[in-house]
Amino acid sequence: MKKIKTLGLIVVEVVVLSLVLYYLRSALLLNHHHEVNTIMPMLVDIAFLALFASFGGRLAKTFGFAPMAGKIILGIVAGPALLGVLSPYAEGVELARLAGVLFILFEAGLHFDMELLKKNIKIATMVAFGGVLVPLVSFALLGYYVFNLEWLPAIFLGGVFTATSVGLSVEALKRAGKLETNLGNRIVGAAVIDDILGVVILTALSKFSEGNLEAMSMVWLGVSVFGFLVGAYILWSWGIADKIAKYLDRHYTQTSTGIYTRFFFGSLIGAGALAGVIGLEPVLGAFGIGVVLSKIDNEIKHEAWEKIEGYMHIFVGGFLVSIGTMLPRSALVSWKVWGLALVFTVLAFVGKYLVRYLFKDKKEGHLVGLAMSIRGEVGLVFVAVALANHALSDTYASSALLAVILVTILGAILFERAVSGELAPEVANISIVDSPQDVDNSIDYI
Image 1 (cartoon, rainbow, N blue to C red):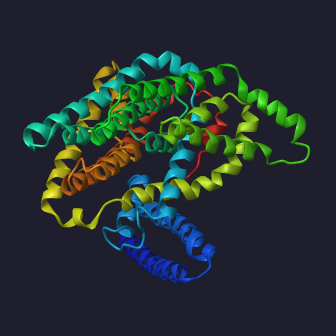
Image 2 (cartoon, rainbow, N blue to C red):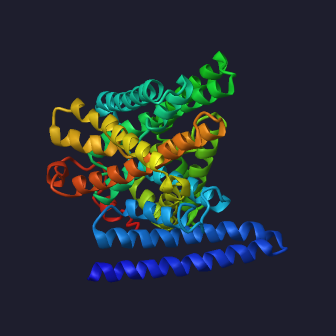
Image 3 (spheres, one colour):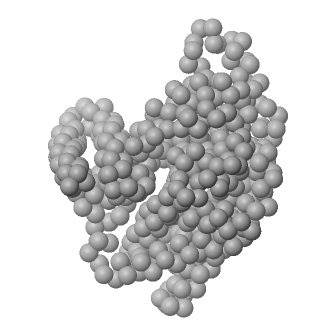
């Protein structure tokens, strides 16, 4: 009875908030002032994304499933699929989506331990390559031989399910207090390598679809990826972050207590922008600069992050809701789309979960397999690029998009329950890298 009452209250809250949002957006767009009709709608969208995220967190808590899944569900409700008060391609929604991913990956980098990665590089690389090749090949063969697609659309379909969502995996690990463990490092390391491979595949397919694949473009892409990895490692190994911190101590901290917060934020945005300029995804730049800054003094890191984390409540929640808004209404009323989506969901989940067999420890392999099954931002980018280049029809694109959302929700629920439930005692014995306070200070995105 209590659950039904809570659900009823959430429904009322969502309806009221949707009406307010609809009125505000309509009124703002009719205003003649540029700041009011252009900037304010973006800010309103970001604010309401955060509020919908709160409803999603409450829904998840009431019914006992992963908070991130609840927020994606609220995105489906608020998006074009149902109420239509939030557009997935509105500037404010896109801004919140990108900012949320940047913040998540930046935090993952801050808690990433390069020394542990050196110890785990072999297994992380094996997991990443296995997790990319199996979905890519299986979906490509399914598309070509079963659905009679051309090779390019079939490979595009496979590409949608290649990359693991680093952000969502990190969120689940952090909530369970396992982000800074050996297990967490293996998962994040594999997911990052996985995403790099996904970005390379996406770039290559985009150029194929445009009909202008040039050898030099591929060479430049390879050089960019290599330079990104090597550059991040060199800056980390040289302790550049500590040197900058000492400079700030000497010249700024006596007059301003927020200099570290501004330095962290500026570094995050600058690194993301640089990654985009050289042809990589901005999220990889955010992760890379997070790794570089992870070597900074812990007290400074905690002080700066405590000030930044308030913004993460807004943008990370907005990112999760925005994923749900990308599901079109046609996907909910088409039996063919649902049938294809269910097939894709099962194949997508199994294709990643098979990496569990790379581990001798079955329980650890089970956790890694579940974590790698979580899709998200890169898969959605694949769908968007496929549509823009007319590589996939609306039916297959909608089915792929729905499958990405379904496998994300399924993977998130199963992984969070596994890592927080009966398997937690086994992995809790793995040594923590930084101070235990890091776990206590982890953010609750309810």
